[in-house]
Length: 448
Ligand code: NAP
Image 1: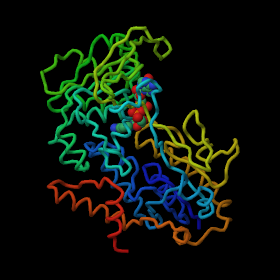
Image 2: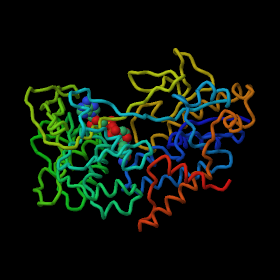
Image 3: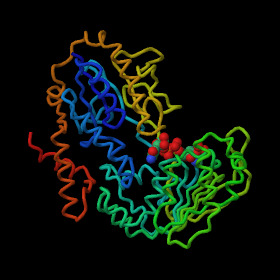
């Protein structure tokens, strides 16, 4: 019998647990999460209006309901008051860290921390009801928003800013965020890339969705596109980039319809400073860039200011070091060889990684499948050596003895019931509980 802890119940954690129990009938897996709710970024990152991607929760649910897999929510690993990684290692034959990339990258420019400027992660957490999210009145008093970055998260937050109440009401977003977005007076959203359109990171499917939003014009300045070396002859571009450029060219050639809202897609503008008006962000100063011939850009010394009462910095996620685990600060990942954690270049027996903390914050949810598979293959290859070590019969009993009371699967099901009841009481479907108290209170109503 091999007892494995998987830390993190997002896609990479669930796919790892699934691979382990499917490939070896002697493996038992506890999936630990610091939150009382499972599914990681599928619950707290995928935009609420992306119902199809959200429905992946059904697949992850099947994994966590497997007879040899247990969900243990509300267990913090590492950090102040958390279960030390060294202790976790004693409780299980092997530990797989699937903790993702928990923070956002910084721009490192003046004014970045002005009131009214937030990371996209903070905004996403708020409308996704993450219990650590802060309601900072994101859209209150804003007419114009600037989203910095042109990845899929930037597209998500741009789309959420442009959506109306009628489209958001059927989602599971928390009532407070729904009310705030319904009352939003944001009419202009600038989504800005520092390089050219052929170098943007968004995918075409996500990009096209912007053009399908009700009462919203997508405005593209042909001059921004023309700077891009791929613009003149998109046929030479890889297929994904070519499709993006074609969509953008189409919008650039379409006159606005006079809709109430405008999404302005801008390129070749590098943010250099956030400017204050009355102590809050009032504009973003950009420098015009041109291609440097090596895939990057260089500044031109020409500047442009874009008014904004709300700035969302969407320039990528970053992994956070976990106490007791090695960490490469240059990549924001844990050093590994085929998923086996490396300490000073040497394999650390029984410690593994999968997902964003292994390969960095790239790829779509499905990318986690092959990533988890590689780690599972490594771990099962080491199984004979790992199983020789004595570990407790039941780690939960040891955790309880140390004052850690996990939220079991029944607790999560009780949270789901409470969210369905809240939705029904508000005349909506499911409505997420947005704070620790209500989540834990709901979990406590579980029948053992
Ligand atoms: P991302 O894809 O890495 O995009 C980051 C963006 O920020 C890029 O446009 C990048 O430009 C820009 N950037 C970085 N540093 C900058 C700086 N200092 N100044 C200005 N711009 C800067 O990150 P993401 O959007 O956070 O997405 C993370 C991952 O999640 C991606 O793999 C994404 O596809 C995935 N995701 C998928 C979906 C979906 O499938 N629907 C939804 C959300 C997220 P450069 O290219 O010039 O560096």
